[in-house]
Length: 375
Image (cartoon, rainbow, N blue to C red; front, side, top):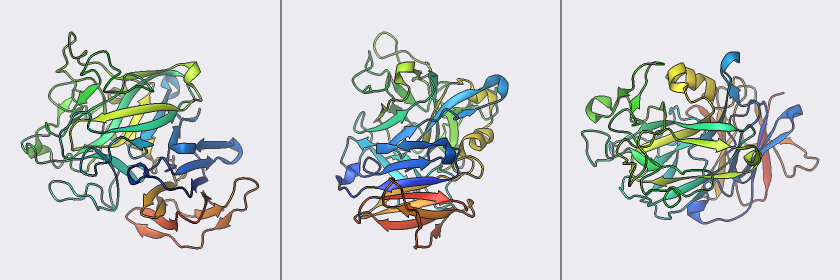
């Protein structure tokens, strides 16, 4: 998929003719790049999510850099069991929750083409997914996420059985083995201020409890919200790890321009991650409303106003190219090579699915490059 937050007007993706094991196919074998007009070529080769120097937000007096990592944009997955662990879900509505509702339907507000769903078996470190990220700006980056929750049937009185996973201590590290203590890296939704189900619904306000399921199902169950990620309040410094500590990652100058691995590990089913956000501003929840974060980072689907994102996903022996229907006036073009490319219009007309234009192409016909162009 190539829908990283590029503020551009033309996008292209490449589909290689190369078989992969079914469990690896999601993005590791789909390469993408973006043509930025006179800005030059910025790529996500090998599913690397790349930050541009212009990925900056905030007022002039408080500018902050960010990298937006789509939950479904993982490169590799550890577990081949289709019933356990992480799963990429799209907006087709094919995957349903315990309550029988689509995890993501055609009208989902998930950014990009989908989200990272966690299935309903409890098992610490039963699965891991690894992303590749590349930064353009050094700094200390704090970890946020945009996410929703789904009831998994384990305990229907609250979201306490759906709400935890592990993050790594650093880029290139394993969240299971590379922390100093066993539960370091453990982040969860309940049960106090450190939990990510406790959300500041208004900037600078208190963290409000959205943990109890009976009254909160309308708040969650496919509805996305932002929060910062903090280590569990249940950690014990002497033997399991420090509690209530913000997760942050140092991007030193020597790491800039280099693809870095970011691995998360499974624990419970139910939490569904639309995207991770690495931000040099640690105070987003104090300075912005939920709607403002959506506007800054998602409008109109991750590409900035008027600049749509072209997404790509696997579907059997085909791949599906998609972009927002709100991006009027754009045409899909393809080329067989990037060496003196001859861009031609794709003859297949797009089909509308929810808020997305989609075009399905055969993945076995050879390498092709795609872009959106507005005359």
